[in-house]
Length: 209
Ligand code: ATP
Image 1: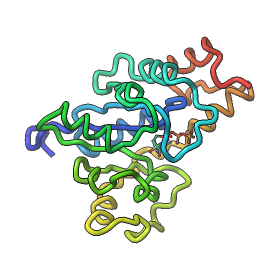
Image 2: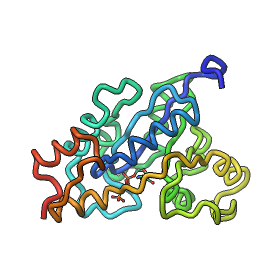
Image 3: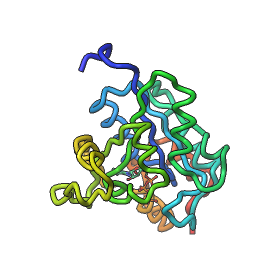
């Protein structure tokens, strides 16, 4: 689609980013290209609502690693909105704040395919769907061929709309869990995280046993 034929589109990418890895970076780029986004804003959460926070690196480190990851890439930005707000990070609160700060901009919330079947558990999900378009990037281990509209446990028309915004992308088999495991085991994480993130983890002795 011609870039001038629609209002500016901002991708919002929420996550724990503990730490950010190449899967995150490439899915942000895939989503950008698939939906003609102008920019992507990475938003690290303070406390994730649906995950244990055991092993969660302090917010300042996760933020600094994101800043190192996007350094020099003007398409990407990092927001500390959820860290400043503190407590459990609900996406609806974040999107309301981002929408208020970006009038006239269409918001695209980027998720990985593993988050798709949990969407119905998200706080005020229908209000959230009214504020943004959810775009899903495939993830190895999540069988999208078997996914049916009824697996997205939301009222019509949302399952159909959400399914229509699934993209395969580069299918990166990388997770933060694996990165943390590799660091704890003394294995290399080179090529799995941006070089600045690799250096930051080493310098600050993060994720060691
Ligand atoms: P962890 O292993 O600690 O659970 P994670 O690697 O899933 O972490 P998060 O920061 O929790 O990373 O992910 C933020 C978002 O990015 C989620 O929507 C998740 O589904 C998505 N995501 C993360 N890694 C990938 C990947 N390799 N491919 C597709 N989506 C991904």
